[in-house]
Image (cartoon, rainbow, N blue to C red; front, side, top):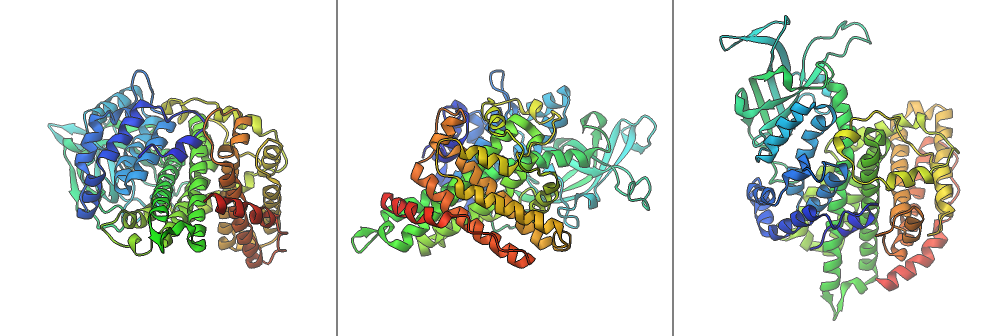
Length: 573
């Protein structure tokens, strides 16, 4: 199997000839049977990870003299691994997630220690969640106490302390039993004034705990529906002692650091989802052409062809938005927060839709554990709840709408700069302070429409209708009164970002106009995707307006385009 060509062909700078990524992809392909066996046995794929380490896996996470760690490489690895196995993808994805705090806030000594451990074969884990707290990290009860070691015994004191003593339990942790480098969030004090809205948040600290130094006990693995072979378990911190030099960033600043981490990690999850969507397309296309009914491949049957077209459409959308977001992260670091949240929301939903369409093509063969599609049906469910649920992303995007400006450009030149940025050292890009980038949708789609490529007039109309509806909702009571309506609008915004990503990175003519000299997708696939998915988004927007009591939007004009394009696409199919 080649690299996840859709992701790599769409990413704006050439990565498909990266020798390390090619070698890792080849090793994953060679380990296909071992990955299937591990998933069936619900076993951690240690032998596969060891084989990948022998191929140089650690360099992706720690860099080398020639090639630094970059968002581009990390997202690429996610796309590759998720195309092979959800369990493997999660087992690898935790490395970059756990190391993000080190990339962002680690000093030179901390990076040297952690990177050396990873190069020596130690796994990394991020200890955030607790059973009673879930995604509410402000409710975390794991406690870190300052103190000194006196004759080997810990003595609590805030007078020139040298260590922190950590007590608590973390659950639903990826790598809870196998990770040696444990980046841990703990409560490190009490609220300054519990009765004050300004002092009611306790301080939290993020630190590196080494399992080998004691005070760390593994808890049993959870039996999860998706990725059953990954190590989703727990960790009991029974007085783990942490030297203060292993605190990442400022003591008490851990919660803010975690928010920075999640801003970046969401783009990585989008690439995981894109890899899963690509695998759905691979398996669906192969089955539709190989399965013969009444002497002809079933792809020739109208209903099957429709499912195949939609599988391809959702996979293209997911890959385009994930690739765009990876480029944004690479160039802008945390300033790409709008795009990482939109991609986390949209790509995970698109991957689920791609898998569902493919499941309808494979029929019963998608439900048999011994066949590969069943594993995909299970695994794809994980990405939508990994690093923040869809509801969290909807709320985040809705909160950012207040910063959305209309009718201001230029935008294309700014985008050219982002897409021309070669892979950057993530330690520099992620820690750099910049104002968040949020290209105004109406100005941006109009500038894109002036470039060569597929007709974007219907997309211009859709963007105008969406922004008009949001303005009307915000002007009335519905925006503040109905969280459900706000969530639906946030989903529409993320969907529009996916359409824009297809127009920018999949359309070969417009891609060239943006200064990208390689890659792209088939023009008929681009035209079909813009029209068909644009129609879906427009229909959902009409439902949202009806729920909100707003005027229905005008038909953006996708229907006429779709009627012609669909005939061409079916003929090509």
